Image 1: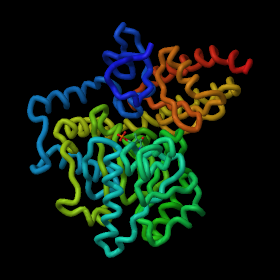
Image 2 (image 1 turned 135 degrees about the vertical axis):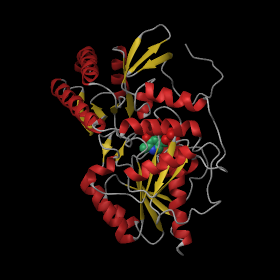
Image 3 (image 1 turned 180 degrees about the horizontal axis):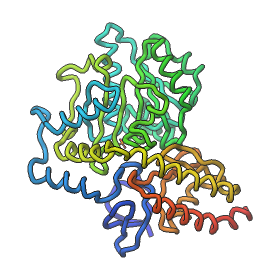
Image 4 (image 1 turned 120 degrees about the vertical axis):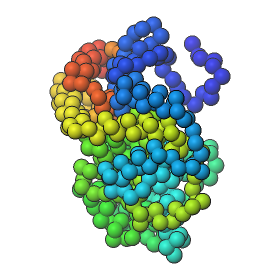
Amino acid sequence: MANTAPLFTTYSRTPLRFERGEGVWLFDEKGARYLDFAAGIAVNSLGHAHPHLVAALTGQAQKLWHLSNLYEIPGQERLAERLVAATFADSVFFTNSGAEALECAIKTARRHFYVNGQPERVRIITMEGAFHGRTLATIAAGGQAKYLEGFGPKAVGFDQVPFGDIEALTAALDDTAAAVLIEPVQGEGGIRPLDPDVLRQIRALCDDHGVLLILDEVQSGIGRTGRLFAHEWAGITPDLMAIAKGIGGGFPLGACLATDAAADGMTPGTHGTTFGGNPLAMAVGNAVLDVVLADGFLDQVQTTGNALSQGLLSLKERYPGLIADIRGTGLMLGIRCVGNNGEMVQAFRNESLLTVPAGDNVVRLLPPLTVTAEEARDALRRMEAALEMIAPMAKTN
Ligand SMILES: *Cc1c(COP(=O)(O)O)cnc(C)c1O
């Protein structure tokens, strides 16, 4: 039955209505329990209703909700100091979403060349399969026809090269290029990790051509791959980085991180936001870091991720007619399907396990980073039961 609620019909929603959550579990209106390996698409990094986040948010709610960026906001200073201490960055601009964090990174890159006497350097080079958000600039950056169609002329200054194609990238880096913008692991594109060696080559290319490197770690950041940021696996650092999703743990929060050199054009009045850096968001962001930066937390993500990945590989061996490939790192894992990925998501949902479809016929597993080994085994058992259900159907196709 079609839902006739007065909402834009932009989402094809699954008819499930959740009422509350606890850790990796979601409970629907009838009290039925689902294992949440979607986590709001890598947003609920610490699961649902994490006591430390609840305390941080409600504590702040009793003091002060909103302040204009006309005033100093101590929560912003503290969160920025901690992000700077933990990364390549020298400074941070807070936003409400991933797309806004990317808009800030793109503006910062162009403005850098503008103030350094190279205003013609405006082009941003991205990779096929990318996803950078749904604003007019970020759909141009993502370059996907299905997101651009019907929304007027594509914003100028965005060009794409095939995924991981160093030769094409080199050719694209002429003296009108400002930045290379990439996801170290494509999320919506289907958990496609860029080879660490290729990432190192891209960093070197950017240096050789005087071009900035912008990383989109909106999905892969904040511990998702078992390091604080996915680019750490390659041992490189970017000039600019967009983050969001996991840093807010479910509260809308994004950020653009920059080196001082890259952000030299972002002088007073050049950029702004009403809600970005709101005290409620800052309280939650700081609380998320309390947990993620605690000793041993990221090691635990790696351990649980490895166990989950091993379990998936053995499912792949047993169901070669259903699973083509397992990919990803930490708790950012993908199952590339032989058949339709939507059907596999549905089969998992029938076992009360929530996952997310992605490009390249992939089912994404993005559980809360707090998932335990036992909960991971529970998910594997549910997946096995689902695969057992659809295996006979796959054979007759
Ligand atoms: C989700 C996502 C975005 C967009 O974030 P919004 O908060 O939806 O604007 C951008 N880049 C990547 C890699 C993402 O996963």
